Image 1 (tube, rainbow, N blue to C red):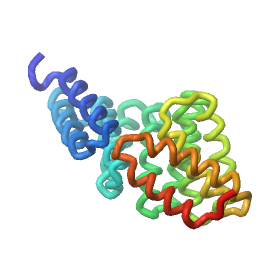
Image 2 (tube, rainbow, N blue to C red; image 1 turned 120 degrees about the vertical axis):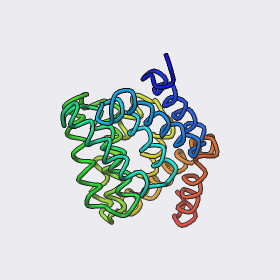
Image 3 (cartoon, rainbow, N blue to C red; image 1 turned 60 degrees about the horizontal axis):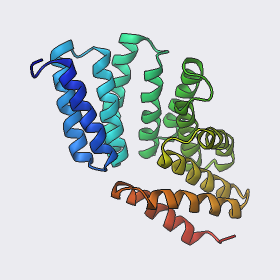
Length: 231
């Protein structure tokens, strides 16, 4: 095939995904960047397959907590995909989910909420209202709303996301993410600390069983539980 074949880029990109799953984010970024360079040489910088690799690079930076580095990567992925495939393409919605998380992670709540709502509308239309990417949009919307000090408004999207994710379990860490966000929303809005603590404890168990890459989330739950009265 040769070193600049698109299939070589795809394999390199997948290796990056595997590194991310194992919590080796520096290695993941390195592989995604290699894949990006290879794909750009093979197909050009404006090809939709470049956008897919940039989506994975954005997610790696996001999961690593490197939000400032993730933001321009997300933006370029979205721009390329929209130009190549159209604004309604489902892959654009997937990247917008990451972008919403990245914006909210930097305290850009208004932008993050707007991005999550855009992703939600796009994905409900393109993949259906019960798809796991829709659940991701709802969780991003809910988390950003909680962080913007509007916990009561976060409950509805988080409740819907939780229902979708519990009905069709896939990634236990994504379910844990939604559960802890709901716990925070319930407690901060005064809707009931008992149910909130139970949700947080379930989320904690999932993170405790995860690789070292999720120690940060586990520690955040422990800090939260220490401040909230138990059932």
